[in-house]
Image (cartoon, rainbow, N blue to C red):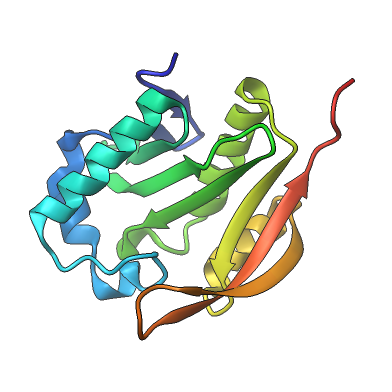
Length: 176
């Protein structure tokens, strides 16, 4: 059913992730950006290709939709975001942006439009937005968009690193 998806926001185009931005993704995967990601890339092009291949497979299977965010003014690549673990029970949201575009409201704009897309196209009971407790800027996004704290837990990144996750949820009434 899903082969390509394009979502428009006021300033951005969200397009299904592709190999076109592989080099941009590789350059953006700095230690500062990947600090809160569930894995730590080592700057290997094969890692990025694996990320892209997994994203494409998720789109084909309808389980994950991963997008590149492209600025409409000049078509600059800003980062990636995803709709993950799609089920009729819940859907998880995630994103990362290049360091030089932090603090301009892109995260809230993107997640808000992803929510509009999800509400119009998918069946589910609630949305999940997990974020590390220390990632204050990212925590503001679900708070601005009507999510509530559901719980907190630890999640391993690797054998030496753990995240202190705050799980935000936004519940929807089941239709009859």
